[in-house]
Length: 209
View (cartoon, rainbow, N blue to C red):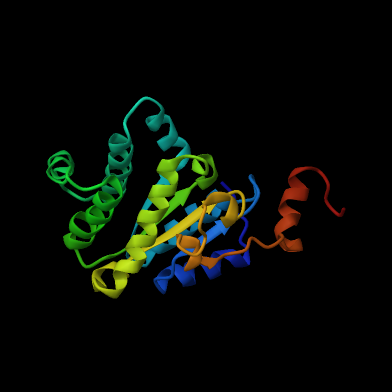
């Protein structure tokens, strides 16, 4: 598929390679998912391991299951995307004494980061579908905890998140400053440039408009 290059591509890629947490918040159908996919491709070219979580899919899992299984489905998706070999069921059961939020942070530390010296970026798309769900709030708290762990566990410097969705930080979380949005870089989606619009106009039979 044709992807229209915008300044956001370069900015997001640079920030993630620098280890910055980033967020892309804009109206629907403005290219957020395409931006994430294109950036993920470029990150892999830079030997960065990438995982993608779509909250729309996770919401389907949550409807008929427990909170613990919802968190497990996230961890399982990450392990699958990162091609990590691990007995996730056994590890998850062995850490059942922790809260789900604590267990997710430990998962990143013991399963993801301990497995290699690679850098990792996790894209979380469609945050807005979980805005009013306590699980979504807890997940974002876990993401913020991973950032805060950088001060005591340097390994967390190799783990970065990119959050995507519709709305504002205030609409997505209750306490912005204590959330990932309090420390992440906002990546604006600028307008298309003329040379980017021309191919679309040609396809629509509107050349020269």
